[in-house]
Length: 112
Length: 112
Image 1 (cartoon, rainbow over the protein chains, first blue to last red):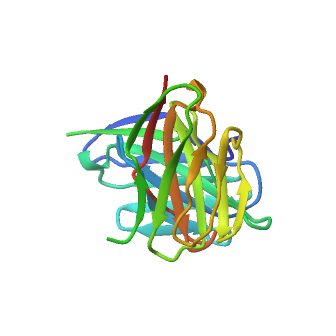
Image 2: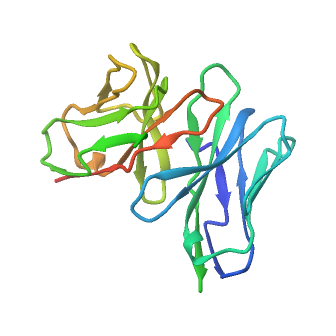
Image 3: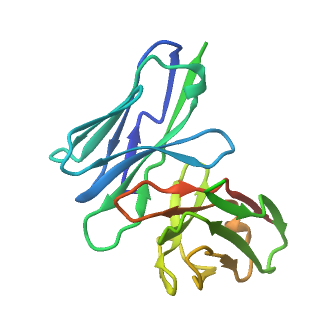
């Protein structure tokens, strides 16, 4: 069963605009991760935020985590056409060994 | 180049045939996982391993076997292929659950 659920399912913006994707999850987590997948390719790890962190930055990426609401958001600033991809959140629970549980993803289209 | 290598990239099987999807990593990662990705379903965990000689089932293990005799290799065996196993299969590895995963480029499997 999916742990994370991304919202929206699809997002279309112009180059230079900001893109925000949201993720909700159901159980307590050790950390939450965001991945990017270009069409026909494997997933690429973007950023990891631990349960005791509230915000994290990496280049044009900003991730927030609200454990009280069991939600996270990924903000991509000043989007480029090359950011066109599907974005997935994945959670690692805090009970024993845990693999990643993925959501269904947000498909982002950035038009020139 | 360090990373996760999956072979083959494409495969067509007839119903009832068996085959092994290969996965190898050269990063000395203890954690390895197999996922399948189907349209609209995100990634679902098939089997995972936390070290050589240790494996466990994920969300959708039926019809698949794994073994982990070395740290580097984590093959996935399809015992008797069925059309429902048509999917894209990804292998991923990580140092531990507190770190991001590195994904292979995937194997696109079609069962006819």
